[in-house]
Length: 496
Image (cartoon, rainbow, N blue to C red; front, side):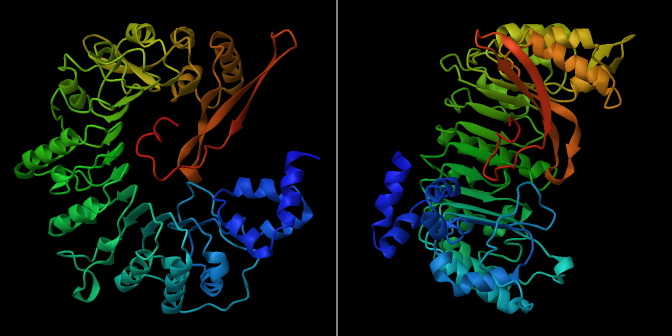
């Protein structure tokens, strides 16, 4: 008798209510399915009562589902994650209960649907994650937003005892002024606390009349590890979050007025200084801010402009263990000059501009541990004192890539451009095989075409089969869709 069969038999001896309690503590659907596969009896218990009630991701109103969840507290209580996305958001597959939902239910009015959502949320005692992109849905007949409904949903959400990860975007909070929502009552978001991940995305969260309330709201969750808020948020420099590790600071209001530029700069710099445990930073700014040399001593991943790095390079005592680097305005020559960064730790590098092919060879030698590389489709060449964009010659590019001895993933359009575009697929096949021979660790490339639903390029996955003696017998590759995105991922979306 196998170990799984022993567990299955032991489980069957327990009372049904104890079995239900045990299953309710299992978070992941793959773990539930593993249990379901051990016996027919277990499958009947687990599927669909548990496998369909862990995560909800939906892009449409779905009144029948919300009516079902409002009526079945015994099922709703096990849901861990809810994502309410816009109709156009295909970055991840939809997931929602189907088997037990009465699809013949007639369309409800919007007020009844919202009441059912609120009731269902109050049932979800194990809810840990809530993502909401609040927009008008014209196709569903919702041409305008009723922010009273928003306040009702957030009020119910505030009662979830285990909520740890929250993202609000779109028009969430657009009606809030001076911290008050509809009917001049305090906005219910402010009562939520003990979060570990918080993303407030959109220009509405940079509204100065609400900044003091937003800051107090952030400080109600001292254990936050992941934070994304507009860089224009007034008072950000007063936030000290000892557990903070990942930060995203998008520019949401466009060009910043000169009168505000200095105040915002100082606020962000104070914030970065007093949160020295930050490891991942995505700072979406067009200006160059000189950070103090002692800032961000634990920084591992950075996506920003080269001005951010300039101040950090002045440190004589701190060599930052950067693993992932994306400097939007830096060329390859600038990267060869980086100082006070531990060159042995860099694994992922995105190069925005190339002016010298020789600089790529220098980067390969200086940062020998690079496993992930992105190159632009063309490089800059000086022609009669004028810089022009030209494609790489294929032999040149293959030589460059083979100098990265540990390369596993190559991103960007450079290889396709060097071959001649997607019309030269036979030549591309030869180039891929040649590159695989030169880079024995290579396992993934970008394809020339995009998967529009996920707004990302398709991937070429490389397979190798070795024989009994360890020698390579066969090499082949396949084109795959890009993987689903993770909404709570400030920078690794760049380095997937």
